[in-house]
Length: 91
Image (tube, rainbow, N blue to C red; front, side, top):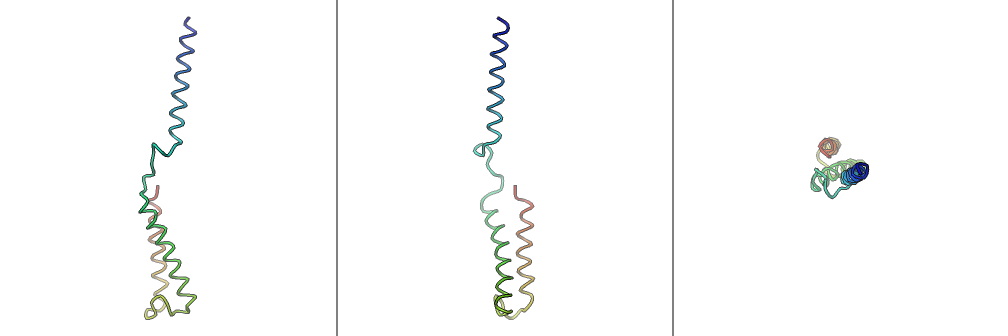
């Protein structure tokens, strides 16, 4: 009789452990702490900076801002760096 109670207790504990383990792997109960807008801005800055530098080289220093010359590279790298710094806060 004691064996049947201990086996019922073991079954209950096993079921509870499985439920907890499954809940640890579902994203429904634990949403991402990083909001969507943050991730969109982060990736946008990286892509904008890369695009800025590519446009500068392809247009042979005519675009995006013709009057500042090689400072266009600095602006592009700055945008990329801000985006990369934002990745440190991404969870």
